Amino acid sequence: QKEVEQNSGPLSVPEGAIASLNCTYSDRGSQSFFWYRQYSGKSPELIMFIYSNGDKEDGRFTAQLNKASQYVSLLIRDSQPSDSATYLCAVPNQGGKLIFGQGTELSVKP
Amino acid sequence: SQTIHQWPATLVQPVGSPLSLECTVEGTSNPNLYWYRQAAGRGLQLLFYSVGIGQISSEVPQNLSASRPQDRQFILSSKKLLLSDSGFYLCAWSLWGQYEQCFGPGTRLTVT
Image (cartoon, rainbow over all chains, first blue to last red; front, side, top):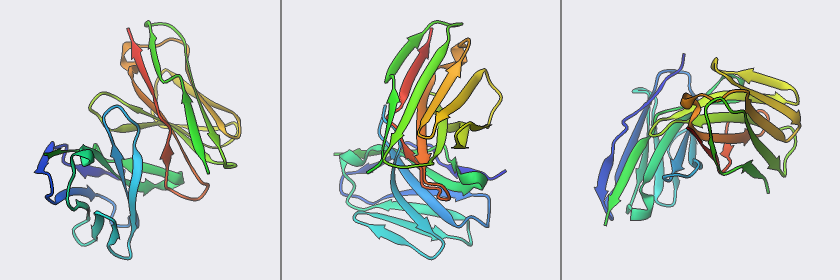
């Protein structure tokens, strides 16, 4: 059974700092990874996905994959209070399903 | 573009009452459809998924059931609700053969 682990937090960073969120996965064969953002009371929204061919940058967000240590990170540069949310990591499972981590709560303080 | 709808947005039901939550997707054909539940402060638990009309797979044993009467319609039901059924119910869809899932706005269910 594949597992995805995240530190539940909360992770608190000051406005303008870099927020670093980590996710570890159990299946060494995992090839792709998804990051979702979930604001309190709202549904998750996909913000980034990364495949096994390297890091990926999209605006202030960077996803980094470390296959040797089996973790994927999401870096948020110039963190804003509007980035305060829970961030969910997910990896594919058979049959088109995703396995989600429990999520890391991020709080960006003004 | 594709959109996903869920209703109702919120629901308060007494223990032992029936439940019917509906999810519809627009702008795509033959999507994979998923029902998740999220308890307060917890992660996402996959309840059911469907790859086509009438094809439902259950992930966890429970008193809930799902049906897919039309290609883009997914329904979550219960004959008798339990207190433990309270939570945030999310419907999601993905294109066939792809893992990227998009979520609907969710239904917040409180069983009293």
